Length: 151
Image (cartoon, rainbow, N blue to C red):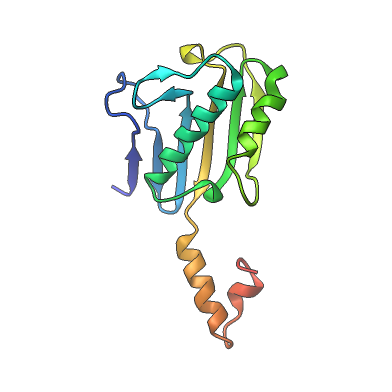
């Protein structure tokens, strides 16, 4: 099968959902909750702690595919208290060093596990493309990549 699934916590309650799915170079990370996979415990009931744990879970899922936050294209953030947006944003921003992914933030009435936040994302494994473009830059006779997707 072309589709590869990943689960962060093999001891979790059976939920008919994978933490991540890869198909080719596309990766979908399902909604991550502020639950520590090692202990199965919910992070402290404040948006900063919960945002940090959710982002750690997103990164752990990406690392299963040997990827990082630079590969994230889009994130959807679900929050039960949109007035905590600024506090969430401070923690969220600390996980990125280059270009921020596109993002949607949605206020919701409630989330599973009484969580304050849930984040899902889509990522793209660009490593093969990066190799192709670096080879193209070495080849002065072929500049298709540098004029298109790599430039």
